[in-house]
Length: 504
Image (cartoon, rainbow, N blue to C red):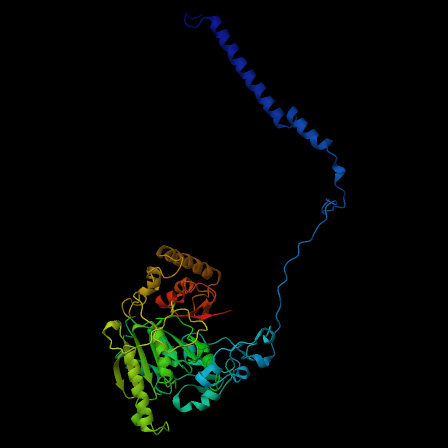
């Protein structure tokens, strides 16, 4: 029996609707399956494309050569590196501008024959200087300070000549460096401790030092543990290989001499300078050599003289000189030092120490010959003179800015606008750049910054940013400023680094 709410006609329509829905679902399901099977029209067209493509355009013998036969092909040639053959073994110690045979052709006066005398173009060697036979990797620092392989520096002359002075000893297949010197046979450490009773060596006031006539550079070697960099030089003379010994030890040193041309360092570069029996005639030539030391010594800097004529009363007979002669020499040095505005601070035994006054206004000077040069740093191959380098208003005395703070402080030459094209901002940017660059180098070569690389050279140092970024007691950097480059070596020294002028 039918209900009033659901008459028979409504049930019929509902059944029909359900049937239609089911039918549509089945239709769309079958349509999807048909298209998925790949038999649709679009897919059929897609399948027809490869069928209509000429597959025989590729032969079975594949040839990948270019088909642009109408264009001449020029093969790209790689630049070939020039190969240099090794020199004959006799040139193992060849130093182009310091060769003995050439040196002997020049006058002895004022040590001219010991200065740089470079060969003409036709005499230059174009081969690679060989290492000594059997050369091996030097001892790592700090062991290298005390030992060197004989094979690397095969010269025994100094071990015999300076045996009683403890310069160097030959033991088996190595050299040992006891740390002695002519004026400090008991060791450089004890000698430096005596200096430190007068000179502020321990607090960073003194950072750069100059050793004129260094021997095997033991003074510089033992200053390194006090974080002081000494530029040591000595001539290439009968004391064979003394500079080579120094470098093999991992100590800064160059071949050089106080002769007739100015030292290759900027004015006001060093905090301290010493002559330990260097036998330089300080009183000769109207004090020319002492005035050159004054040029490179900073205000407030120290000059140490140990050896003749100091303590002449004890040694004049040993030196085979008369009392009057050595006494007159010391008196002349005293007078010159006073004219330079140096004050004697110490004299005991074999050592005398002078301090260069920071303020020259208090000095009593009589008619001093002042140099007229416009640039006191322009010294490359310039003749030494007997004039006095005048002080600059921008000079900073020793101790006013201590190391390591001075490494990244703005150098006075830059702060006062004395370096063309360099500002405080560009200097600081240069430091950032080199810190980033050195970190990149270390990622490539993880031995950089270790004792594996002890002696490092920057051949175009500019502001010294590379050396500053690499600064460590594990290595040192020789900052070279080429003679044709912008003169920035004074900035390098103001940062507490060392370097030299050179022409490549």
